[in-house]
Amino acid sequence: MLLVLAAVPIGAGLRPAGADSVAGLQSRAATIAQDLVLEQLQVDAAQQQTSVVGARLAADQRAIAYLDQQLVADQQAIERHMRVVRAQAIRSYIDSGADSSNSDSSLFQGGSATAQAASEYTNLAVGNITSDLAQLHTAQRALQEQQTELVARQNQDRADEAQRSAALDQATSDAAKLQSEQSLVTGQLAAAVAAQQAAQVKVVAAALASSQRSAAPTSAPPATIPAADSAVTGTSTSTTTPARAGPEPSGDPYPNLPDPSLNPFLTCVVQAESGGNYGAVSPNGVYMGAFQFSQPTWNTAAQAANLGLLVGVPPNMATRAEQDTVAVTLFALDGQQPWLGDRCGRG
Image (cartoon, rainbow, N blue to C red; front, side, top):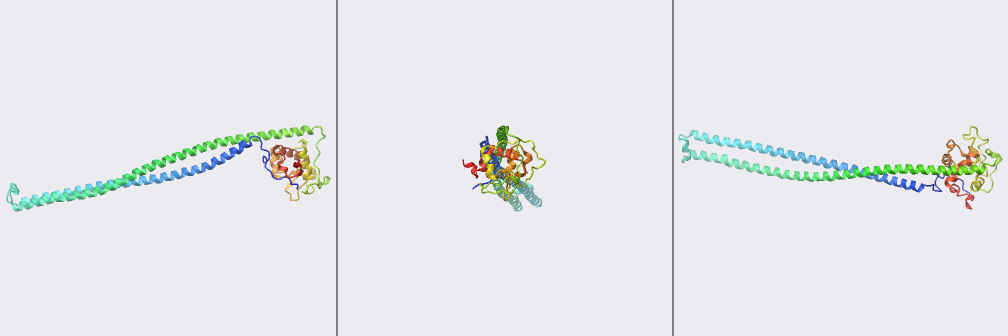
């Protein structure tokens, strides 16, 4: 069964020089891009974790500062209270001495009033101070325990912060290395693609030059064959409609383009695909011209043949020389690959 020319991308058949290098670099570039996305996610996660630890550390510092203020305030309050207690005790002692008719020296000579005053002084000045000091020490111990816990937590948070910062630095460094490698591979890929394209241009130029040398002894290239002058042979299972091109279109972008000679394979393709009708169109309208190009394949091959003005032009509307040139170019790049389905490639 005859298969007409499909939209086969340039390079799908024969692999030009450097194709393996380009494919390898493209694969490597894709891998690096994927790794770079994952590394950037790690950087973002590390930044977020570092922010959380930093906020927790700041909260610990505020809590410790608040406890320090509480300790200072409690110490000052108890000292004020102790001064008041001492003052009251001294005042009570002095008042009791003023009411006594004895001299001050009789205070410690066994008078009952004096003994009571001395007892009150001792209770107030010593007992109350001892009680207040005990309360102070209790409050201080509670605050110091809280402070110790907060300091321990602060130290842990600082260790966590250092660890997160190191992880962030490592992730950032890895991302920078991947970006550098990506730039390197991108440059290598661009150079490999340029080299591949240059090799393709050389292949096409050599093929066209060879075909044109083979065609040189012949007469001037024939014009496009109108549909009415050529019928499709019955050797192909595909069908073609009468040519829509009619006379050769005016305003031909390449009027002086020489018609290259076709090798035996392409000569067979012309007959197998269209019966030699350069204006042929398949019944579904997808494949056109003597070689039954699809529009995408025609556009790609015309560009490769340095016939950019033919991009977008229906193949059946191009001249015979233009169609032959595009076909020779496609064969130079992909060999028989685009026409593997027809009988010409069966040996």
